[in-house]
Length: 193
Image 1 (cartoon, rainbow, N blue to C red):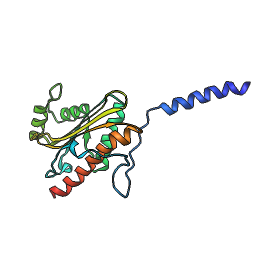
Image 2 (image 1 turned 135 degrees about the vertical axis):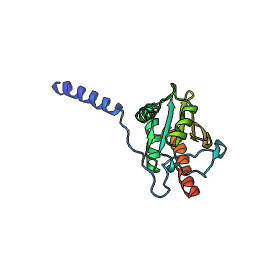
Image 3 (image 1 turned 180 degrees about the vertical axis):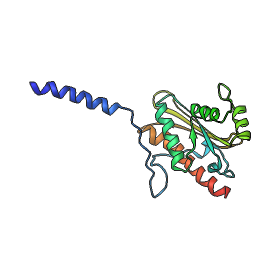
Image 4 (image 1 turned 90 degrees about the horizontal axis):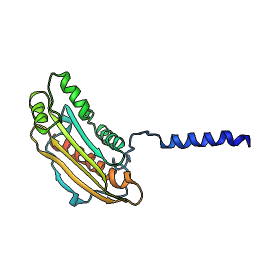
């Protein structure tokens, strides 16, 4: 009977650790250079795929992400996917504001497209990556992603991925979008050269 007093707390601690928020970098399949997934973004979901601008030429990337399901994890996944694609100067809205203030540039509240355009023209070019992940009830999801030149307003990549998730939110709803982002970065880097 004395063993139960130690076993129950140990099981409770193990269960809490299993629920802890830990983020690990996504692993790319070395053969395909893409994330392992069970589906792809439907070709009709890709509305814009312009490859004439090298995304690595932007000194700053502003990441605007929102999610009704695991928001911090979603933001981390996008940032990590960009970093693995060679785009490392990625800033959240708060980080972007702090960077702008360090450079004596005042930003509007909330941060708007005119402020980003003015920053792009006077301080440094900004690439804006906007992403949202919405769980529409049950297992219906919508993941959207757009990449835009903050200075010109030109949309370089825009896609929607609607999915009824059967097995894994990550592999069915998020990874296909991140794979399309990786494909766009690769094509844009080669296309602008």
